[in-house]
Length: 69
Ligand SMILES: [Zn+2]
Picture (cartoon, rainbow, N blue to C red):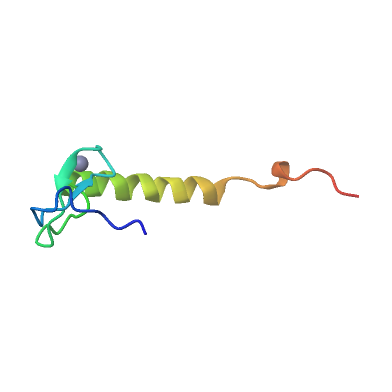
């Protein structure tokens, strides 16, 4: 469904967009940071994910609910 598609039939190279910097990079199985372009981008994304989780976790939910009688 959402698998990366080859950019051309004549090549096995699969291009993916780095989730962090949106740079289009070759998807390589020997890249330990895939689908990110680099170690830095992977660290950024993990950091953003962690802070998002933290923010959601500490967010008070009481005000999100209307008064139901
Ligand atoms: Zn990147």
